[in-house]
Length: 284
Image (cartoon, rainbow, N blue to C red; front, side, top):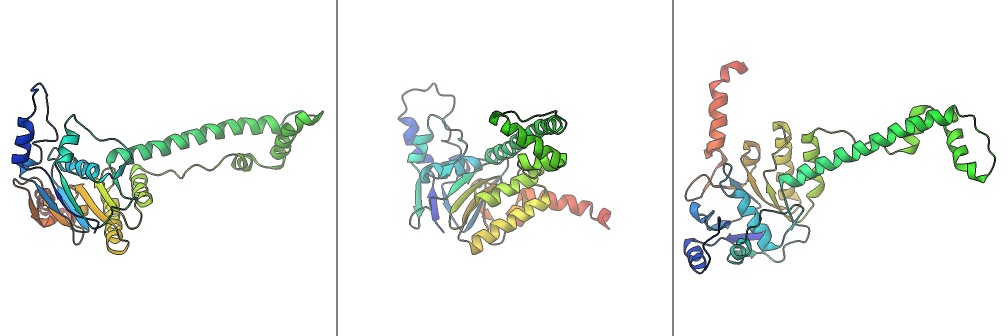
């Protein structure tokens, strides 16, 4: 447990601030009036704390505010309005000692960028491979005579080509592709590489790009990381597989005021339950 409590401005604090603004031409006062509209003013954390709710409920906003207040590292920037610093300034956080420097917020954009980087790397390697195929054929069947030291590099290529098969020549001269993975495999790899021991992690909808089986694997990985490796997680999600993690404290942001619930009480989970119960006979 690194983060124990976090408080957002309540209606009264927001009213006092907005009353003092001289200009009234702003289209939005975001993130003011987002969480207070839900009666959400405080989070008491556990090793795994989940913010649950539909799109637009404010769970991502809450994560971004917490990350900014604690100075947690992030890879991609978040939506920062003119009033974001003023809002964060009015938040308070209670911690147990120093937040570990390895802590970070991981968003869907981070995972997506990682998958794009893998594809770009493989595309570059594939292009180099095609060049080497041509180079091999040119060297293997060239009429070559060694005349001076300037021909030495060319001589090495000719000898290598004539002593090896095409595939061995290419493997000798270019690194193997990063093993091709599906989007789900790449996304799961990202989380297992970035999440280290003894740190606080804020995860924004980590189930994106993951099939149900991978979501269950991720949930088990996060559960084990919290239980055995000193990690604390604050997660925004509506995945039933992530919501079902043992010991998770869940804030239902589809309720006004926001309330703590068991995962089986959540609306999204009930929709899944009703659907499969309706089609139960088809699984026999």
